[in-house]
Length: 180
Image (cartoon, rainbow, N blue to C red; front, side, top):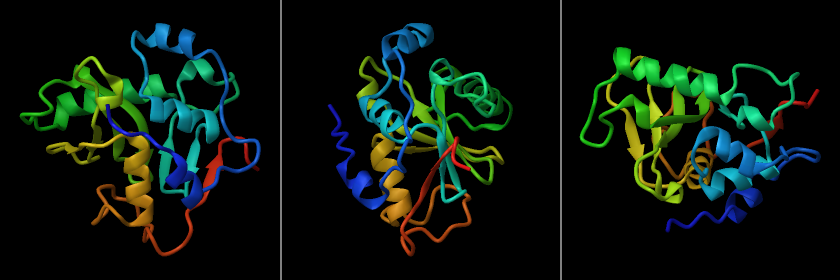
């Protein structure tokens, strides 16, 4: 099982007061038909749906979100990512089918962040980056929290997303969707 310790991300980018989404994860997982990776559920519980430095957005499952939450939701973005991969993506040895793509975020330049949902253990699903212009997806053998930490700390470079922020120079800031 992949380590999913969120403490390094919490240290680098503390969640704002009042952030996070709560709800019945068992009902969410029943609606989706699978268990979500534990690092993701912990992120959503502590941070919620929102943006990091107006460059990376993180979605929460639609089932946890109130009706006034901004759209599109996680389900719509997953369907869009699958459609885009089928239209413009280049299958690879790792990513052969759109049905294994689940979107959990996106960049300000329309890249999709997600998982390659293969295997029985969601904690082992690698992170997937789909470039907005098509082509072969990038696959990172790490969980969502480790990926976010690597991107915003500058530990993964060059940045695998088209965001315009120079990561690693300023402390990152997460803004929850309800923030003014």
